[in-house]
Image (cartoon, rainbow, N blue to C red):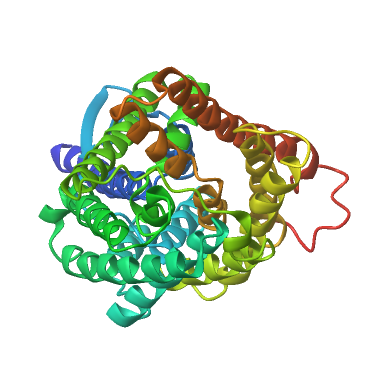
Length: 435
């Protein structure tokens, strides 16, 4: 009798251990994936959606997920079992490149569909962190230089201003190559780089260069600008994720303040006002050049951020949509509200690319558009103006209006796509296949 009971208990214990092992692997995968998605800049509601869906497809619908920008909590409740695990967020590692972001979101999409086991997912995440830059240090520098020149061309500088911007971009790229191997430098790098570049601009003015300081400084500092962070913060606030949205917004404004501090300090060192130069339209490069700037910008960003080769064309389509929406709406309205139309069109195009044509994840294709819409660059000019005491009230209102317009455009674009164009809608007669 005792032997029979023991023989019955042992399989139960074995099954319990197997279930516990499976749950531990799933929990570890959810934590690691959540960290990676946060590091990719994904909005908190979307991270929570992904992790909950993956837990459900793996037979664990009672896993509760709570995510903040720097930490995530996974709460497990099943019968008598009650377990809480905490996984640190993305603040301990460097930002992900585009190829890594695409891989993370592809892993999440496959896991949501049940096509990827937790163990396989963990292996792919580990491999993602070890992926080297496709183009190496030379490509990193060349891509940064092209990205800077693209932004500068869109601002229509003089030819001498374009050459000065290229020189500063080259120096900035070399500093970034050194700093990306030393993560401890990432905190002070925005201040140091902005200070050095602003001082260089100030002394170039003393030597005879006649170009507005911010037109020279915005392009080489474009990748430091927290346009994506500030926009995502407004989106999270719109989704009622108050804590995460507010904390991201504070972090974004802090980055702007650090950059503005460095710029003002560098200009003061050279005893330069920075804003006293006005360029006549005849001195600028032609009005058709900004469209060429968009192409150069996207190609440079593709190399600099090491995106996958198949992503370049899709990134270009989305960036052109964003710029076209902003440019053509500017023919009828003026001010920061033009960014709303660019953001809405950009979001629809990015989602169509992902779900209709099985392209890269939407966040990869519309990241270039965020920089083109330039909430970060406008914010930097606003913060610099506040620090110098120039039109403080108007700068704040215009900056917040610009951010709200971009975030609202993204939400409206996503809603329009979901309502009218998603593959699950019946009138999807033109899609090539199911997403």
